[in-house]
Amino acid sequence: MLIIDNLTKRFNGNTAIDVLSFQIASGELFALLGPNGAGKTTTINCLLGFLKPDSGRALIDGLDVAIEPLETKRRLAYIPEQVNLYGHFSGVENLAYFAELGGHRYSDSELHAFLDDAGLQCEAHDRRVSGYSKGMRQKVGIAIALAKKAKALLLDEPTSGLDPSASHEFSRLLGQLRSRGVAILMATHDLFRAKEDATRVGIMRRGQLVRELTAAEISHADLEKLYLETMRA
Ligand SMILES: Nc1ncnc2c1ncn2[C@@H]1O[C@H](COP(=O)(O)OP(=O)(O)OP(=O)(O)O)[C@@H](O)[C@H]1O
Ligand SMILES: [Mg+2]
Image (cartoon, rainbow, N blue to C red; front, side, top):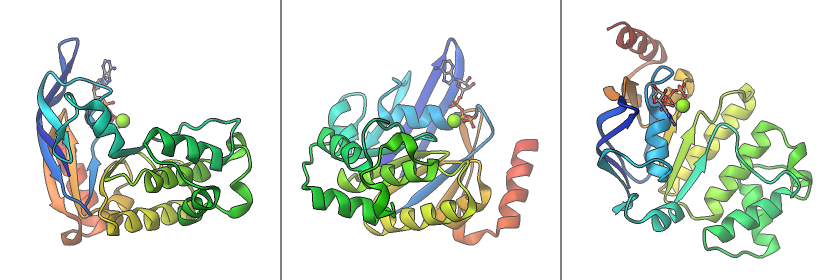
């Protein structure tokens, strides 16, 4: 569903992504780990079409992001660290707006049902988003992914700053999306959540994927050990 194919991206002669390749199938969650500046966000920005690669391709559902920017965006949902919503509008209004951008129009009761599914408490649905906590905004982000019927979800450090219960709840929602066949790419510094939520874990360093492993095959302690070893190498 998501394919990064020999992707290279340079900024002013500095290589941020260095001939990177990986694939994420439907229903898979690939957690991308790596130190600050490793190239995780740059990879996500290439999938979003925000950045144009110098060479190589990013494909979503078989479509090249550089050639079909609108069609590929339709298939995607994106949750950055701070979900950007319109503060003056309510959760329902934001959801209606973003769903419509993705080509979907819903009745009020359908919109409320998406917010329910995403775990946003009822009393908040019609409140202005400017009064929402970070976790509540994330839930609207999930509801948008559900309403857009996104085939792929891109997450950039989604759980940083969430309390442990909110982070656990967020993981449960990701599990639901996976079971609906959504392909998920999650850039994170949270080794614990990466091990818990991912099917596969990749460790990036200087624009390259230096390790790739199956989450089920490694313990939390071993993942941390491996990560630290990779950084020292
Ligand atoms: N718009 C830009 N202009 C110039 N350089 C950039 C730009 N975006 C990213 N870079 C550079 O590309 C490299 C990769 O950055 P990126 O943001 O992808 O890292 P990251 O893995 O997401 O790091 P973090 O964990 O800190 O979020 C860094 O050296 C960064 O300085
Ligand atoms: Mg980043």
